[in-house]
Image (cartoon, rainbow, N blue to C red; front, side, top):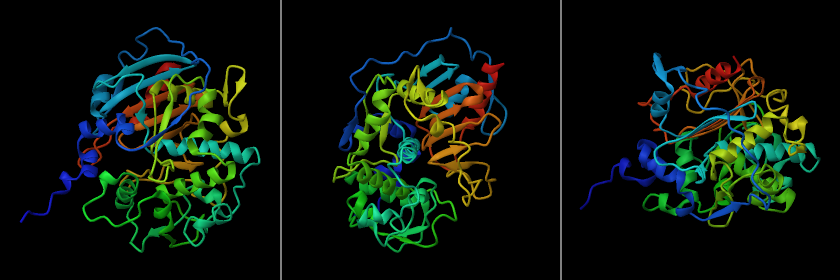
Length: 395
């Protein structure tokens, strides 16, 4: 008789304890589960003008335990796969590590939430989406669930309180259960839970009134993605392509991972190259425009930081922060807001994925990584590093 296997032997657990295994997943999603491309369009790639090298030479950064790190040491600690820095429209730094190549789409994890939030904000601005409408009126199958009882705006601000299948809510465990829904090979032996994203959402029951407290939960984004599919009559992949990806001059197609029903994993199953993500960030930094083409309404691009609605928490904790950490961030339309003096905001995903935009510093940073996620491994203070880069370049 064999013994009970260690958690470390489960495929889903390895991705959080071994950077090499995480890197395998972050760059090879299409080889693991079905996917759907986000078409780059038929036009040419928009240029990324390059500044002379050496703009970041000699910079020193603060490490996880204090002390001083060089840029090379910082990237090593962060298990960085790619770092791109744009300042005033020029690419001042582009670096790829651990064999990662510029043309390969890289997993964005939860940073993908922000891109869907941008699409939703544009649709709302154009009158195609009512933020105040009850979700169940758009997606009747969600009636009676925590998400169906909420309003669209509650989903955009992580404002629902729920438990799944009667379980006490635990963020880390629910994230693992979501991954098991998406990929059969990640399911533990004897798994009998939901097999699709839709089935997973159907088990969510409200444990409190929506719109009062902040709870960072993937289900909000998956419910929002279904709302957008119903409102527009198209897939998440086609919608992102039509509204953004085909209009920013992307070099490569992006892609979403799919569940067994063909629904995109909108909360974190998106992959794209670092250069194309830099184009997305630069477009937003410039008020939603690329050259003379307005891609996103200026009113949407300029209110990511200032648009937190009344009634929502102005300060929320980052998901990886310990309970005693101060709540120094804000959250609006699925974007994180550091509340720094420069009007910065960012899309953020597990293992170190970041799209950081700082309008007052004229800065866009793309960071891809395969960090270990463990209480025993302190996270590299990436936001502080990005701000150090921005203030250095501005000076």
